[in-house]
Image (cartoon, one colour):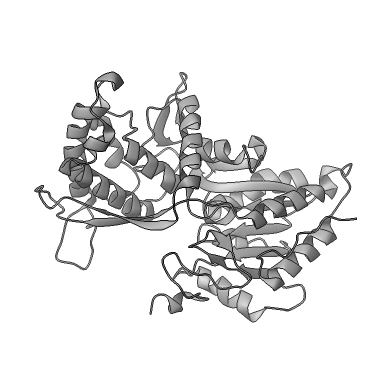
Length: 396
């Protein structure tokens, strides 16, 4: 008897389409690769609730776990494929640029580096006391703001520096160990929108700012059961994530996911012969976001299986191309994040094809306050009480 997922908190139509699609593709364990099907999952905000790279950034900030000198940090912040002279607050009277923001960050990092980071561990003052410093609050709020803004502005380019890869200086082994700590910490953090405020008492180029962070990671039970059912039906699972390769491979290859590392794709970066990570994206590698996900599928997975994926799972514009440019995919599952971008085209298509036999696109809602799926297409956003179906319901 073929294994099937149980209803749990899936939207009823998503539940039906998943089981129908899995049933049609189920094969015996002895089947050749050409006869097997495979599925592709995004990781952040798809396999898990919230973003593992975001949590890496915040864990390093909360623990001042950097291995860069102030000069090295500044070089990372001010190099890469983006215009660092552009205003960070366009259409306002504040004409501060990314260079100004980097200057503010490094001015405070120099203090933290001298007083804490570059001090032997047994001679350091407690980290909790450091966090009471105005310099720390200034550094934290502005570094988080830089991450949020630069993440949208720069184009990831092989061979170019990534201005948000602040794990430069770690060995790959150290980075994997850090990744485990990040994930375990995130699972235990409450789900909340955390706000960071810069200091009112420090003169700066940018001025006072606020930044935010969607804190806490959860792994929905329905996802884990789905993975188990896929495996029981001899359907292979792959993850293609825009998060750093060693981060996502470390996390997704261990419990509760237990996915083989060669079935996990992520962003690659330069590593020296001594195993030291640099902030430069590795030349000749694929960008595992947007159109790059389609390239990964075509270059690695279609060549192996001689066909497109059976199913795709995603949540954002990083998944939009693979959900629109692979015509032979049987089913795409979009997790509803009510984003005011072109994913709303997919949302509308899923709404219009709801309950239609053989619908190729379905929409799955979540409760972001609980970290669970919900039996609906609509999502309850973090910090909200009412569910929303389309972006216009949030951004009116």
